[in-house]
Image 1 (cartoon, rainbow, N blue to C red):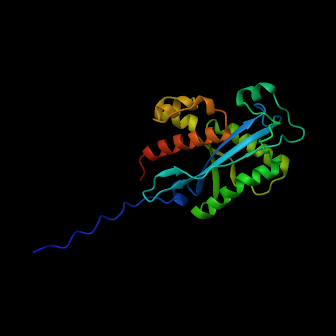
Image 2: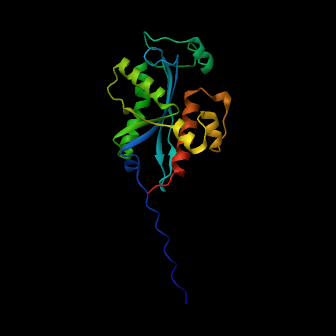
Length: 211
């Protein structure tokens, strides 16, 4: 006599994004700038990736949004920074946006992701994250943008996380220690660095035991 097949096991419960990080939504950010001083140097590129969560509770990178930025009036650009980033300010295909417009271009998908996941606020994830947050906050203040979705001072820093997980603090070495490829020719592009930082953060967090 045939016996009915056993029902498939129920999926393991997991913590939804709205509860995983105390109501915060991790959003990976990288900026390219005209120097190291956020109060003086120009914001030149910004890229963001709101993180997603699959049906098992694993984090994964969402969609990338990015913008080239017209240097704001009164900001400085150190030529040595342009040598590092390879940014050509007057390149005909750069299609840079004014600072306020560039911020809104990348903030809008972050606000949409907050609504989707029922999170209260975005928290910036970055490699040396306070550097990125400093330039975001300075651009917000300069441009008078009123809908900044990011927490004003809290961050998740992959320098610390990678140091704990892999003993590496340089992004390229940490990404490779996590098992991913690194293309040095694409480094110092806001999009590339953001995408690599997102992979690194997800890899570390997904390995962490969850209760």
